[in-house]
Amino acid sequence: MRTRLGAYATFCPNPDCPDKGQQGRGNIGIHSQKEQRYRCTTCRDTFAATRGTALYRLHHPVDLMVLVVTLLCHGCPTHAIVAAFGLDERTVAAWLHRAGGHAARVHAAAVETGQVDLGQVQADEICVKVCRGRIWQAMALAVPSRLCLGGDLSSARDGALVTATLRRVAALRRLRRAQLAEARRIRQAVTDGYTLTPVQLTSPCRVAVLAEARQVAMHLMRTRLTWPMPARNRAFPCERIGQRDHSTVLHGVAVIAARLASGRQEDAYLRHMVRALGATLDATYEAEGRPYQRAA
Image (spheres, rainbow, N blue to C red):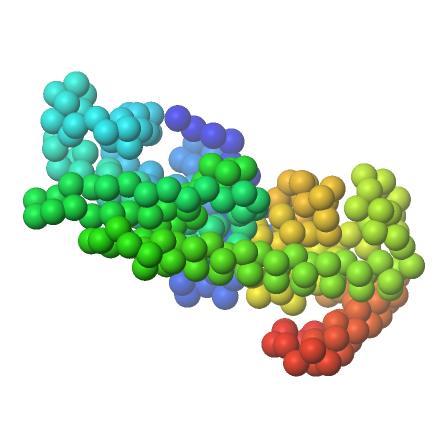
């Protein structure tokens, strides 16, 4: 199973690369569509499109692994899968560990960084029988996305188990509120600087000054906020722009970065505006006594 490669939302996984983990830097190109490989122009390293996923260096069809993991998630016995597909039991176990490890990394990168719209949260518990007793697991589920927010284990079904799960959800809510507040602060600074209204900034209109203001807001969020880029995309300006494609935000960040580094005379006003907005945000953070990333 092959998909058409798109390098814009990809980053270099090389730990020795200066641009490692940075999306939208323009350093990623397509090395081979046939072999599904990217190339980093900074470190000259090539890497597979499946690097860092459960499908990396998989010697079986992707559809087969997905089917096997799906059956395992629904409780299908391992010996039944081995008999049905002619696989080795160790292969099935390895695929399960691969998928579980990747799911844990996605959970840490997406859920624990506040990228999930919590909305209404549903709590539940299950009991698992083991050789010497039982283990209780309390879980929290985001109703809008049906995504598990995490869980806690205990040998006893008591208040401490429920309290631990509630504290986990409360921490995610605090993080989400802080992210949206920071996004609103940058959005307000941009609308004031460009003498726009929030409706104009978040409208679908593509007039040059509106497009530039949106891209400046994306650039400020990218360079000044400490939470990951996917979370910025969902929190950015408000409902309308928050629904835009991830690549659109990356493109806006790259456009402003290129114009700031170009040194062209026609971009002098843009450079002045970005510096002025950065100074305004610095003053706001200093007045509140909050940590921030100072403008360059």
